[in-house]
Length: 297
Image (cartoon, rainbow, N blue to C red; front, side, top):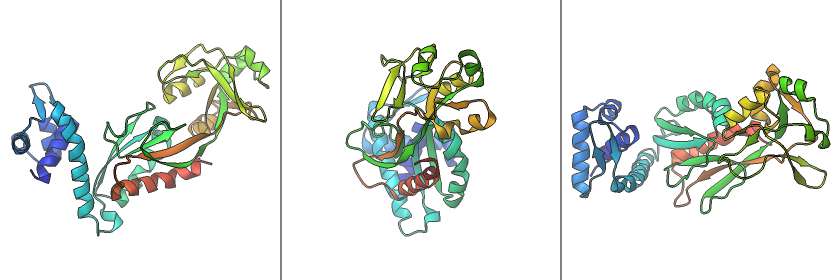
């Protein structure tokens, strides 16, 4: 078993295709397939199910995948241990909230990769909470309270929350000036699992944060849907100021009830607990903190 075979296996598992994996690595389909057969023979287990339509991992292959990622990652780090930061090598798997990925992080990614040309970034963008260990992520950015046990978490700041509505909505329902006024208003309900939590408006009453139940005509499970529903005039939303900046500047949304904001949301970076992060992962995390800090309090 050698590192080159492991790299072929990782690429086939990622792309689900010998042809595409071979093209990415500069190998023919036949050569890529041969490397996998040699790897399977070396470890004494079948790693991939092959068919004319798709290639997928076996149960043993799923377990082998996690260890192979770590082994190749460690090898890449070892190779660059005494190199300058610009020579960091390897692959870093990130999971990021959709709006921050789109508005803040991915637009700055070209300059980071220009400084680290041998790094490869795998960026997942979702509002769902992924399993860092099971899904093989090196680092996850999490907004809100943390419930993951056994993971290393670094809080990097707080997101200021604001209340927004569209001019179309305010023209129809009026502009609320107090908590009491909300009785005549709608809220866009945000729920990742469409669960039983009722729609509500969170505010600080001078002593503590409280929630006022409200009526919602629409429930969404993504920040994109949340933003779009507000722009469409479907209700009031409570969202991070950073994600609403462009719509506020264009007049698509209007800030309301500035004295009745929801509690700021913590932003954290999570990594696995089993070992110290690889040098490329540490570099990515430091970069994320640097570009996120101006948007946090």
